[in-house]
Image (cartoon, rainbow, N blue to C red; front, side, top):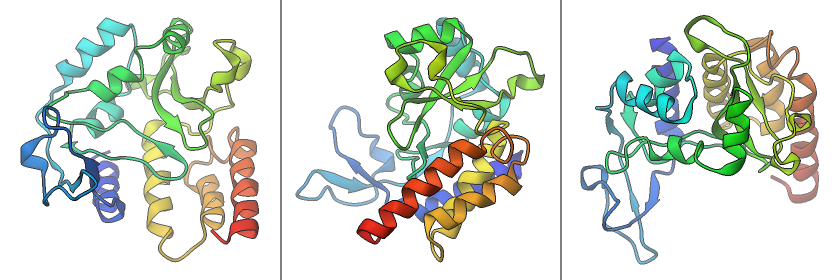
Length: 227
């Protein structure tokens, strides 16, 4: 697992533009890596994380959720202020607002309904459909739950729950890492089918229709707009 996490951050820190908006009382001074520009943005740098597992367990207890062990290990490795690509966004981590992004993903009405159904929001679908959720309805070792997307337009009805799109959080990280690596030389809709081999029991099985939808949409965007 350590290699998957290390590879992810190494790759993501080569992909990110490292831009963040400056907010006096919230911006971590030791992460600033450039002057603030005329538009109020600055370059940030990642720093080693100082949170521990108990910090995450406090959030779990407060909201009645369970996080995969791999998710906690990944998130606590660094403080970082951006973590998204075209396909999805994952929670960032700031030393001035510890775990706030994770809390924000859990602290609203729809999230409360999902948590009651043992669906634990932790990120966002890149097409603004709704949250990524860990499906905790069945016990698994180390809480390494499969991942689905919930369509927020369904307002809590479980009809809005997608099929499993990744079999686990480590497989999501592997696919995310591969995707942003390959963007240097390939079109995004050419890369997504690789997920089927990387995660054959999730993306390559129950998640095929979901990802074929992304492929069709991105191919159409390329045909119409050239990107």
